Image 1 (cartoon, rainbow, N blue to C red):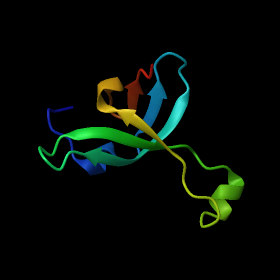
Image 2: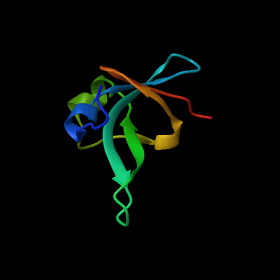
Image 3: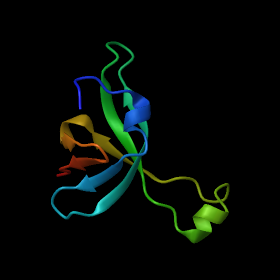
Image 4: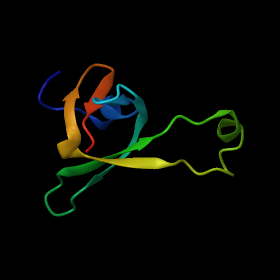
Length: 84
């Protein structure tokens, strides 16, 4: 991958915890600084179960914040993170 990445390339990539190998979820959103426009966090949505998939308006999407400093590597399909 190059030095620059578009949000559309980052969105929906799987995020995996390096320690456990467990899929945390997929990139759903991000937070950036309005002052310098630097991305501070990614928000990872956990995969919905069947009930949440059928009734999304009843069950809001749970998001896990992941700091940019926790990212170990960004690959073609996944993002590896080390959350302490």
